[in-house]
Every structure is written in C-alpha cells, then in structure tokens.
Image 1 (cartoon, rainbow, N blue to C red):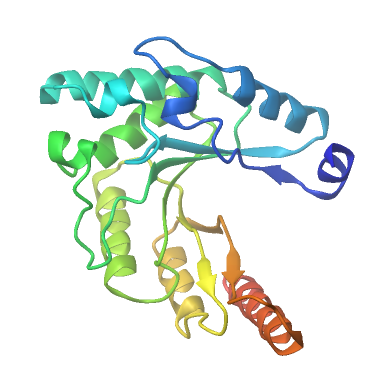
Image 2: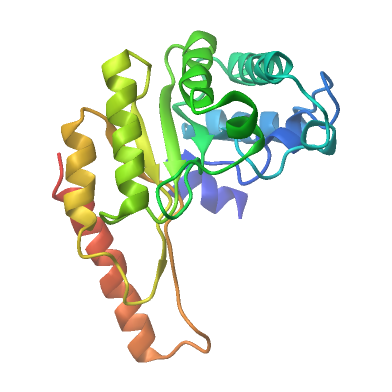
Length: 238
C-alpha cells in the first residue's frame, strides 16, 4: 500500500494526525509521532502535504473542551497551538486548512468554543498566526456544503472578501465536496469562479460521492459522471 501511495499520489493530507487531540493531548504536551511520520513519507516520495487542521470544533482534547477559559486565555491557547504546530513543519507544508467548518448551514457562524469565546475574529487571528509561523504555506478556510451557491457558501464568500479587504492573509478556500450521487450542484463552476474572482485559490479537499448500497451499474455510471462534472468545473476555472 505504501509503495502504491508513494508512487501514484502527489499530495498527502493527514486524516487525524495533525488535529488538536492528536498532537496536544495534554496542555503543552505534544505528540508528533504520527504527523512526523506522514511528513517524512511525503518528503521521501516527493509529495506535498496539506496540513489539516489547526482550528476545528471537533476532535479537541478534553482538557481544552472542558476547561473554563477567559477570552484572553483562550486566545493565548489558540495562538500558542498554531505557532507550535505550524512552526514545527515550517517550509514542509504546502497548504494548511487553518480553520475548518466555521459556518452553520444557514450561513451563520457555528457556535463553537472558538466563536463563543473569541467572536468571529478568531478566524482572522488564526490566519495571521499561521502566516507568522510558516510564511510559505498557503492558508485556507475549509468547509462542507459550500460547493454550490447557497447561504453557507455565500457566508464563506463574504468572509473571504472581508478578510482580503482587511489585509488578513488568506490564500484559498477548501470545498470538502462530500457529495451525494446525482446531486452535484448545478452552480458548482459558478461558485468556484466567484471565489477565484476574489483572488483566492479553490481546492476540492475531501471529495467523495456517496451512494446507497448495494451499488449497481447504473449507480456506478452516475458516480462516474458526477466525478467528471466536478473535474470539469475545476478545469473550467483558471
């Protein structure tokens, strides 16, 4: 498996190894073993690494989620974590999903530890701290159900536009693209284009197209067409 992965893929994204609970299971105590292994494998096979993720509401350690933090304490924890993790891999990460899943489906900010404690500027601060820790890495905000034009993707669009206007470092948006068979949004290309027009990159970060089992020839043909539609939308936007 490793030989195939090393030979046939050009980029690796750790599924869990760089998330907060994995790398900082106790406050100020870091475990880099698995993350280091992935980065070393990528370097040995001339692959890029997409860092995932520095700020998320899931897979946080209990000490963080269950702590009682003042805004100042929470901001310090976030800054120190980002600075330590992004700094450790400085120059070895092509892109970071700095902030993951900040929005609810209706386009409002997801009420998380970070939003509730720090307000919406936790996103701008996280991007700024990540830029300071690794100036060469491209910095992304990543979310799901933002592939077509809808309330959630428009909230992301408005955020990116605001960050750009304020001079906050942001290089791209990640569209997770957890799609359903036969339901690739008709506005996929239009949505990618409007982000590109803001001057940011667009990455399809976690693409899968799920179907009810068992599969059959018709479902597989539809899935093939859906993957082709996603690829075509990407290829159509510079």
